[in-house]
Length: 139
Image 1 (cartoon, helix red, strand yellow):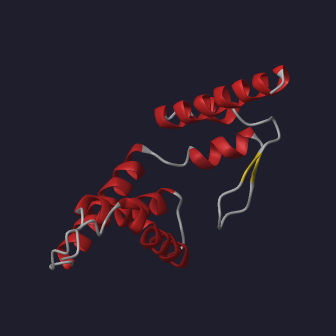
Image 2 (image 1 turned 180 degrees about the vertical axis):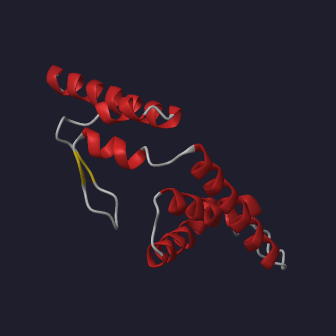
Image 3 (image 1 turned 45 degrees about the vertical axis):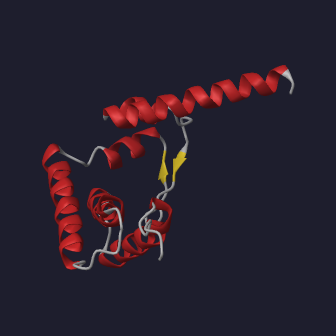
């Protein structure tokens, strides 16, 4: 590997780290700075967000109240799915049911339409095998 390739990898790692740290910390300006000035953020089901200001405006639409609502919705969905599954099949309930709550919370934050929320739930269903849900040993 050549030196320029190593330098490029290092810069990419640094950008990803700043992107993730800024997003986790809720620092939207820092997150937007990881995009080029005219960078585009594409979120399935939404028009592309062009430029740092559009990205910040879209992501900044989440308020403390909106975040609490999304967390409460996600917890409610997880609990309802867990209560509906009365047969113990050896699943890890947090992993098996939590994906549905996570999809609901993310959908609320992204202001998904009902058909998009359904697609998010379907995607959560598809991830269930990867979470180790049916991890019992068959007799």
